[in-house]
Structure formats: C-alpha cells, structure tokens
Amino acid sequence: MSGSVLYDVPGPRARVRNRLYGALATVALVALIGFILYRLDDTGQFQAGLWDDYEYAETQQRIVDGLLTTLKTFAIAAVLSLALGALLAAARLSDHKPVRWAATVVVEFFRAMPLLIMIFLLYAAVFTADPMWALIIGLVLYNGSVQAEIFRSGINAVPKGQSEAAYAIGLRKTQVMASVLVPQAVRSMLPSIISQLVVTLKDTSLGFIILYEELLFVGRAFAQQTPPVNGVYAFIPMVIVFGSIYILLCLALSSVATWVERRTQRSRKGAPPAMPADDPALTGDSAHG
Amino acid sequence: MNVLSDNFAMFREGFLGTVELTALSAVLALVLGTLIAAFRVSPVPALRIFGSAWVTLLRNTPLVLLFLAVTLGLPALGLKGWDSFWLAVMALGCYTSAFICEAIRSGINTVPVGQAEAARSIGMTFSQTLGQIVLPQAARTAIPPIGSLLIALAKNTAIASGFNVTELGSVQKTLNAASGYNIYVIFLWIAICYIIITFTISGLFRLLENRLAVAR
Image (cartoon, rainbow over all chains, first blue to last red; front, side, top):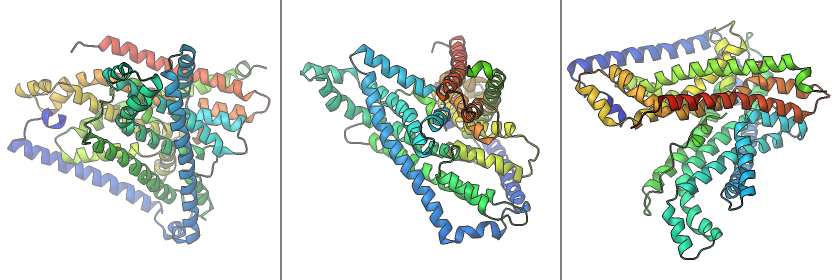
C-alpha cells in the first residue's frame, strides 16, 4: 500500500490537478494508440488479403501444430528441468563435500551462461540434425540449475527447529528431508517454481533462432509464404496473431502461480514459511529470455 | 590452430558489440523502468493503468517475439533508417524496463512508512516526496536485484545474434559454421567473454552496494 502513503488524500485543488493530469495522460495514450493504428492502416497492414489466410482450416491446423510442438517441447523441458533441479538441489545439500562442490560448479556455470550460447553449442556439436533436443537439453540445463537454487533456498527457509525436532526424534537425513523439509519447502516455493516454468515456456521460442519448427517459426514461415498484397508482406499480422497466442499462454501460466500463492496463504495449515525475498540469486533469473 | 588468435579482430568486435548493446539497453531500461515505477505509484489512475499494462505485457512476452515485433513493426510504423543495433537496444531496453520497474517498486515498499509520512507532513508534494525522500532510499535496496537484472540483460543480448547484430552470439554462430575449428573450444572462449562481462557487472554492483549501504 505504498501508493496511498506517498501522497495526501487529495483536496479540491489536487483533485482538479490529478484529473487534469489523468485527462492529459489518457489523451496522450489514446493519441499514441491511434497513431500506431493509423500508421499500420496507412502502410496497408489491415488489407483483407493479408488476413484471409487465417480463416482457412489448413492454416489453423498449422498454427495448432506449431502450438502443440511448443507445448510438447515445454512439457518435456519442464519435467526434465524439475527432475534435474531436484537432483542438483539434493547434491548441493549433501553431507559430502565433493558432491556439494561439484553441484555448485554445475549450477553456477549453467546459470552464468546465456541460454542461446548453450543451444548454439549443442546444435552445432551434437544435435545438428535434431534442433528439438538441442533446445530441450539447453532449456533443461539452464532451468534445472535455476530450479535447483529455488528448491535449495526453499529448504533453507524452513525454520531450523523443524529439522532439529526431526533429528531429535531419531529420523535419518533422508527421512528428515522427505517427510519434514521438502513438503514444507515445496509449499512456500510453488509460486517461484511456476514463475520459472513461465520462463521455460517463454524460452522455447529460442528454437526459432536455430530453425526449430515451434510456434514462432511456423508464424514466420507462414508470413513468408503469404503473397504480398500491394507490396505489403504479411509479417505484421503474423506478429499480432502469434504474439497474442504467446502472451495468453504465459498469462495463463502466470495466473496459476498467483492463484497458488493466494491459495497457500489462506490454507488451513497456515501460511508457509516466507520466501527469502532478498536472495539476489533468485530475483534476476525471471528476466531471462 | 588457435581460434582466438586466428579470429582476434572478430572476437574483439563481438565482445565490444555485446558490451555496447548491454550498456545502452541498460541505460534505456533504467530510465524507462524508473519512469514506469513512478507511474505505477502515482495518484493519477490513467498512469497507474498504463504502468501495470506495460509491465504485464512485457513480462509475458518472449524476448524473441519482442525482437521480431520491433524489427518488423517499427519500420512498418515509419521508423525507417534505424539499423538493427538500435532496434535491438530498443527491444532489450523495453523488455528489461518491466523487470527494473518491479524491482524499484518493491524497493519503494521497503522504505519505512514514516519517511513518506514525515515528508508529507512538512508539506512536500508527491513528486518531491518520491524524488527526494523515497526513491533515493528505495534505490539502495533495489541495487542487488537490479544487478541481477543487468546480468540477465547481458545474457539476453545473445538473442540479438538472430537479428543481424554483431555480438558474441553471432561470432559463435559464424565460427561454428566455419569448418576446421573445434566447436567446444569456440564455446569456451565465448563463455569466457560472457563471464568477464557478468563478473564486471556483479563487481560494480557489489561496489555500489557497499558504497551506498546505510544502517537502518
């Protein structure tokens, strides 16, 4: 509620001023949107010939195929990255120093590398014929490392008394982990885990650059095939149509994260332990791709 | 044969390209991000709506798609004559600004309520309260997350290689295609270049954090 703290309850003059600013801002925004629409229309982007193709069943089928390819890639990458994340997190919390050390090196390395550079390497060196696996393995290595950090900080955020109590009644480390720490950590980490899955979904579009036939690639191939109408190519309609699909997909998955967060907060078992919000290791990764 | 010494000019150009792209997009992202954050806490509802629409839209768009929209869309809107480098700066800067905005906004939330209340009680207006009291304090808590965001930005510049910009990613792509070099060795050198850049950014921000740290 910082908004209401930053300014007084507006009096008559401030109300008039705020309304004036509001009107100016609205006019400016409407003018901007109007200008964009005017330019798009002026350059012939709304000509029927550029949009007709989207009415054909064949076209719609191709879009659905591209969408399914994207979702399939995302599903495989999501499952494998969660598995890798769990494995790396377990290794980083291990009692054996060499295991901990090796896992730290792996996690830090893959988090520091740009994902696309990894994908270029995998594509050129191993999966020349099969860009899908270059994309998936790249996504799994990067997102798995980030998920590992999320799991680890979730487990570390569980109050120390929980594991002390569990050890005190004689549980072994595996039991403490599996029956006390992990169930609590997953509850507090679920929103972050899902946000990282949104990043994974967004990053599947990197396949476009290595010519993998996912949704965005289908879009561009499609726009290139549509014959230009009066010298205008069908790229802008493609960006509008495919952009909306991507944004809706990501918004749907993000809203799941928000829903889960709200749900766990009013759970009968009480709110989960707070996430370490000031952990700089976690805040930046959602900006990727 | 050594990839680095054979292609030193190319590596230098790629390295400088990535550095320039990162620096210019970072400036754009910081300016835009602060402005949008101010919009999002302002008393004017229209600006608040614009701010949250900007953030929601950009955070849920894949960066590749944004690149595509900017490189195809802006020329269609009449912005002709911009080269691919500046279009890439535009895409990266706008994308990162949404994240910077959220980092600054959560920084604003950590400033104790009494600060803004005290500022208001001595008669400061919204822009004075925000500009002179709240934002300078918010910036300090926002420094570590902004550092991580700029590191993410430096890594994201690799995407520009798919859109005709000379930077490290395009160097790697060109050398991978040129036969005769070991692909893993190319990757190693590219990786070292990126690590130099990201370590510099995190070092700078650690310095900044220590210089600006205040006891609360």
